[in-house]
Image 1 (cartoon, rainbow, N blue to C red):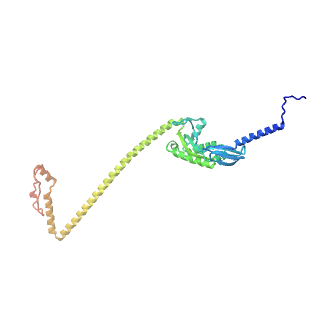
Image 2 (cartoon, rainbow, N blue to C red):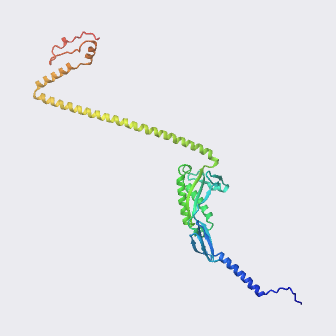
Image 3 (cartoon, one colour):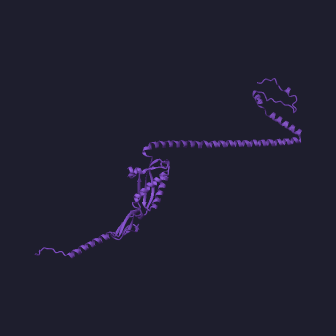
Length: 338
C-alpha cells in the first residue's frame, strides 16, 4: 500500500495519556467543587460520612467536606417559623388576610366530635420550627406528614374532652394551650426535632347543616344570661338596702329596750328610796308625796283642761283632802257636755 502524503498518524499511547490526564483534571475539578459548601445564617447543615452521621454544622459561612460521595450534606432551615393549616388555607397573606375553605378531606379533618357527642367544625393552624435538624431529617420517616397526623390526633383528643359550649365559647384559649402542650410532648417522645410555637384556633363553628339552629340556641342563651345578669344586679341593689333597713330597725329596737330597761331600773331605784323613807317616817313621807302630786296636778292639766282653755275657760281642777271627804257635793254632775 502506498503512503499518502497528508496522512496523520495517531499514537495510541499519547491518546491514552491525554484521556487519562483530562479525566484526572475533570475528577480533580469535580472533587474541588464538591469539597466546599455554604451554610446560610438561617440554616444548619447535617453531614453524613459514608452514610453515617458525622456532625451538625451550625456556624454560617463556607465549609469544607470530603469530596464526592464520601461526605453528603443536607441543609435545614431552623430559624423561620413554619405553618400548617387544618380545615382552611391562606389564599393571600397581608394586612387583610383572605382564607379559602379546603376540599373534602380537609373539611373532614376539621369536623370533630365533642365530649357531649355534638359536632363542631374546628379550623386551626399550628406554627412550628425545627429544633434539632438531625432528628428532623433522620429519626422519623416523612416528618412533615407525621407532624400533620399528630396535629389531627391531638386536636381530636383535646376537643373530645370538652362540651360543645366550651369549644364554641369560653374554652378556646384553654384548648389552644392544651393542644400545644400535648403536641410538644409527642414531638419529644417521637424525637421529631420540632418545637411547637403556637396552636391557633382560626374559626370554630357548628356544621353548616345545623348552624342556623345553633345560632338560635346561642342567641337564646345570650338573652337568658342577660336577664340573669339584670336580675342579679337588681338583687345586689335590693338585698343590701333590706339588710341596712333590718340592721337599723334592730338597732332602734335595741336602743328602745336599753332605754326602757334603764327607765324601769330608775323607777325601781326611786321606789326603793321612797319606800325606805316611808319606813323611817311614814307620815312625813305620805305628806310629801301628797304635796308633790298636788303640785304636778296644778302645774299640768289633762286633755279636757286644754280643750277648755282653748274655749276661753281655765282648766278645771278639783282639790280634795287626803281623806277625800265631801267630794260629791263639789262635782257638777248636771253640767251638759259641750
